[in-house]
Length: 154
Image 1 (cartoon, rainbow, N blue to C red):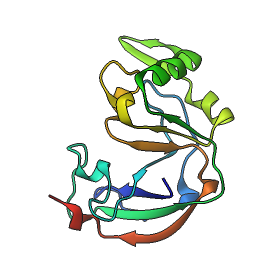
Image 2: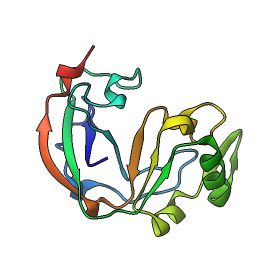
Image 3: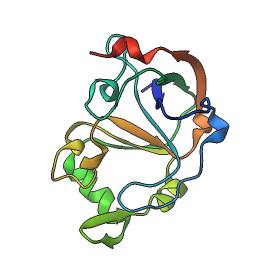
């Protein structure tokens, strides 16, 4: 988790900067704001890049970020852990969607990382889809460099 990859989608006109990251606001199942990253791998880019959830095309930009210090990340790897966290931060339900209090999480953690079995159906966080970290506090990140993410396109 030392180096993280942030993707700026092709339709986003402005260049990425850490000081432009918005605070977390609760919004249905996933919050608005924060910064989404995935663990960087030199060979494949990231699990996120190799998934069907990313449309890689001209204009996509990648930023490598160094994790500095010792951020307090809520790491969730198993369905059991996910269910425990979900019950702690349960906010309510909208239609059939369980909603969690990410704003409260920001008081306790610098981010939340979902990976492994916690991405399986049956996990409250299965909609994270691939290994990823949602950063609430970007003070533990430093920009290393911009990279060409199109080279990882299969």
